[in-house]
Image 1 (cartoon, rainbow, N blue to C red):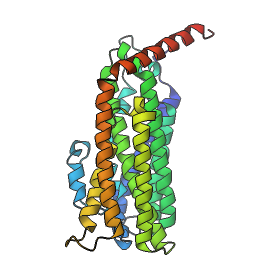
Image 2 (cartoon, rainbow, N blue to C red):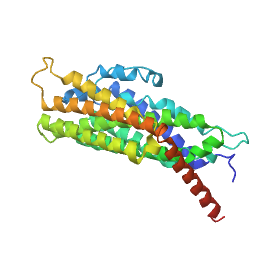
Image 3 (cartoon, rainbow, N blue to C red):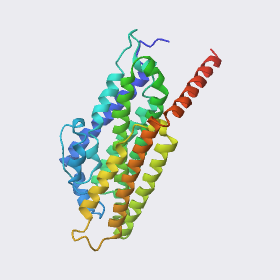
Image 4 (cartoon, rainbow, N blue to C red):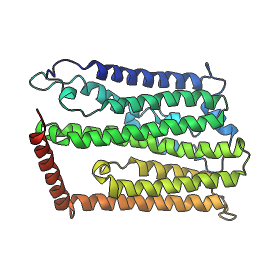
Length: 336
């Protein structure tokens, strides 16, 4: 098979990814200036207040840890669009990967399917969902904005899953070609970057749901926000189970979700906690419990990571050796 020539399908998907992402950047900028949009994102957030919205001060705290991944820092109202700029750096890495060649002039992405076409499709759907969300949110269509957020969140999770699996299946090839640095680039930039954004839009989806229940279906505010907090709690627990016991081999080096959850929830507590410390609402207590839960689950994640890299390393290595032996046997018995 000739690996020196580009694959047109892959290049088209890569181009679509870049174009849709660029469109998101441009439209978000136009929305902030109210060009082609009736309102900006922040003003709609302030129009529908909730008692669990994070304080604006949380944004510079979070962005100080990822400042290298963006051009400018804004301290706005709670908005998912503030958290998309970090994607630029890993997207640049993905583009350059598609034009790198091996020593024999073969294109690297043709030999190693580190970025499956489904990964690009999912990310394109995410960008399309972002564009739709911008239009419906700024037009105060809060019900449809929740649908748009849910769609783009699921698209991000799909992109993450495809990328996790692709990296896991490509790891041996990367090591054999002395490209272990690419393994770490994908783990740190792509996986943690996507996980960061997916976690943030998950929180935003819960907030948008509370907004719709309160201002769209006219359910009492404290009931709506309690429902959102409970949903987020279930998601956190399920995520911890998946990352530590079910998809551990995929998610071992993914840490950013807990940083986002703890930061966002702490910001919510900071803004909505009574200054006197008395007359705590049900949601104040739930938020405190959720912050503590996330902190405990993050600690548990670190403990499990240490165990997998030390005490359980031999057991994990044996499983890997068995997997490699099975893969070789399948290749030998496969029809030519």
